[in-house]
Length: 421
Image (cartoon, rainbow, N blue to C red; front, side, top):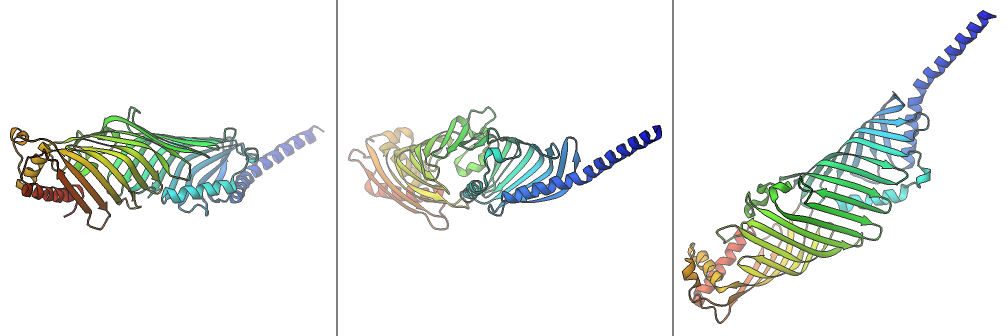
């Protein structure tokens, strides 16, 4: 009898061990197949390199996810752990690589359509929480003039709140011209009712860009106090002939509208220590006005004001930026230059040297009215028209010299500002 008891115990332990061993063998495959089926039902093609038992759950290695309805997006997860084993409610993702290719005006609608088609109600989702401990995101050709955006960070998703949160502390941008911008940092919150992206362009978090979108409205806000551009992650080399190591900017933009329509609002820009053609020393410039902007990169400027010493006037027009970062613009400037400044510029343009300040001011009064139109398209010679009319009190120079000076200044603008040979 006692022997039979031991035999029963050993048999029971052996059976339990066999079941446990079978579970160790069967469970990872079961969870992997379940994940593949669930992903397919949600419109995602999932491949798994290896599945094995991990502490508290099942680990899936080398997981690749693509959604045929969202071309250009690919996610690779080096290590994914789900727990508990049989009915997972939590997932942890490590070493995540996200690759996105294509302009945002194509990718974003595809993602929205995919989400609307496959979104499950919160109560139907089996996973309560997803944590991403380390992610690397590369987005190529997202916007006009931008070749690549790359960043690292972490994030999470919770079913009860129905939102995704993420943070990146190392965001870099490469332009189509080869300049590297950054590093910047960003916080992202994507929710059912609204989403928000906040990016900081400086280490002290005072230069801020905010994007807010809901089902009924969208808003873009930029607040950059006067800051040297190099502290904003912009090398002075990216400014070309316009900037110096001391160049600083101040930007304020507030645009709003419907999510699918253009955004309208006020924008202002001020530059300090900016190189301006035909001026010997760097100066300050300012532009402000009512702006209308829409993806993929169109804009209009109404009731604009332009201040590029010595010219002060109005600026109106519009244009677009194509996928290669090339600018198309049609602008109209109406302004005035003091007669003394016009005399100085005229002589400098014609003779290559300026007048002494006392001589330039002598017997000079009034202004020179300037009307300029600019039509700029890549691959074509810029069309520039400049008309200048001195007031009756402007007696700085004879008419022939004045006309010659206007022509010379026009050629300088074409060469220095518009890059025309």
